[in-house]
Length: 474
Image (cartoon, rainbow, N blue to C red; front, top):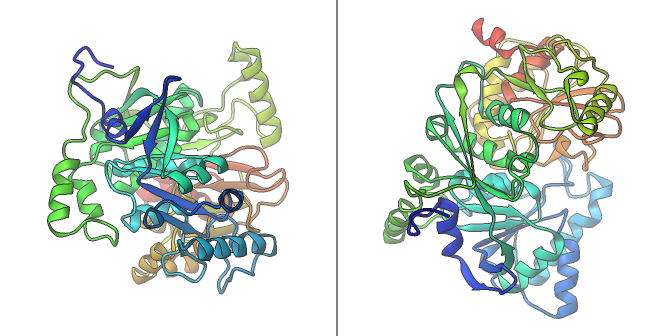
């Protein structure tokens, strides 16, 4: 990878420290340090383990959570969303049979897998972590090599605590310069995807670097790593630093005492070597980035709030041009106009992308003293019950409720629309989630992706708006 064979990238260092065996077909057997299960993709894996009569190889490294299909309504139980009951009961029964730790509906630690793992200290710098969910790369914000896997691979990790993987290409995206008011981590990654496309990181592990990343808090780094999947990458990662160590220190599964000192010494050596080579590199100047909002059915279909929507006639590739035309029809929008002023029906703040305490704080700064516009349904769904408790301790729940938001319990909620939280057909949602595919938030729903602050601004305005205008009035 480098002119200097001793120089390594961050990903190479973690990868090489976890190699069990290298196969003749180019695949590598990697040790998996942490494994997270959830209600959506684990049932068939447990059935496979039962057929093979295999125990879980390392129960202490495997954790389970109810998140995808659980109701978020106040007072919810595992029975509250009828279509989810069977899977929730199956996860409970399977975790009991295989003696695994489960963060169930009534647990104070319940929440979305990619929120729970970092906040519990299950995710650590330099570790490998796998979960049956594509956005597992979120954990890379802590300097972990984390990736999503399929149901068969879930079974393999349970049985062997290892996976066969092909070593990815190395890609680095450096965000330089200062971020302007009203611009957040979500805007940075949407900006990159809009300019370089959903295949820019195909086959790659993406390391995020640069002054804007180094100055970003851990939760912002996790947002950026989360959406690595939307640019085609398998992994997203940020080198651990003092900000990371401060975040991890004292968490339930973090090392303590002398083990902590040794761990930090090792983590400090994980950074990419100065002369390590990447297969692809990009440099983004943050100075000119405005708040971003998507307009179509792909995360790459995003524009700055100041910009006009693109003209399909200017797109030379026929296939891409047709996709854009289809998106305009589905979203009921026209090229040439700006998104500012487009009316919304729903505002959703939640998901593994943007439902941590700092996300709720950013939205609350916009909401204080304002009311959700008549006709808009607004939901705030914390990413975990721990986030919910911390928000309530800070009085943020009162800000949301007084503004007119529904204050919910933790879960994936309206991100994927599998727990009853849906946008009705033809209605328009602005959402802090990571995907705006057709029907994603409900059949024939229309979804615009944006930061928590921009979603809050739209909720109180009744339309997509430039959040900077509202922040300027504070």
